[in-house]
Image (tube, rainbow, N blue to C red; front, side, top):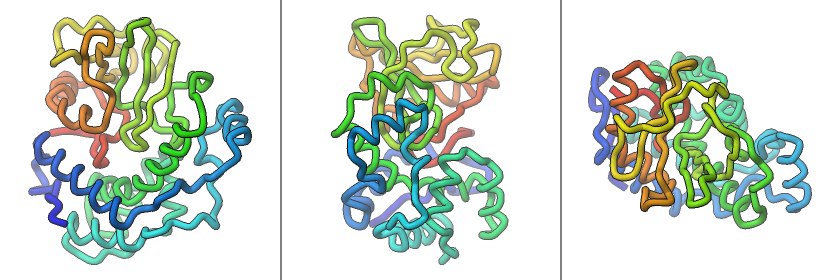
Length: 267
């Protein structure tokens, strides 16, 4: 597989088209070597109870979980992204730290590997992603998530990367790491709960998407007008609207969630 290196230099970031190339080839790699089932094959009732208790699925991850194909996936990304054979982390620790959101973990990996923390986050996220996606697929196949109603992903606990407003004026949230969407009926900023967010988005928009900008926590969320032919909430949509991320970050608003290939800060 020819996978574009998303770090052409220490001072530049890839374009939207280049990230889409990374993503397409990543999916090919996952299809060849990734898991065919999720890590948490639970009874649907047990799965639902866990979520009703407010706990994302990966809070139950066991140290004995089998990460099928992890060595191949990690080594492939290590060679393609860092151009070196990099010592593999323990996959359980990697996924657990990703779910915990502990930023220091990427700094620890970066120090170990001799790379920048942003590079470590991309390599780590891409290596963990197939197991998160496989688990998310199982969850979607088994449960109606209308009861979740929380601002974080029900699988990996990440904040959403995008939102959508449907024909009933209801809000859906989308996680670009696990690639799962879920309903969220609460108003105001997803990240801090403030009602001082600019939710009309007349100034910054693109093809049915706009930016929800919160002036209390300085974070933003790309939002699609699903009721009026706005784009569906997918990883591809997130990557295709990289210019909205750039516009928001140039105004000093922050992106909270990784995009589908493990990048948060653009530019």
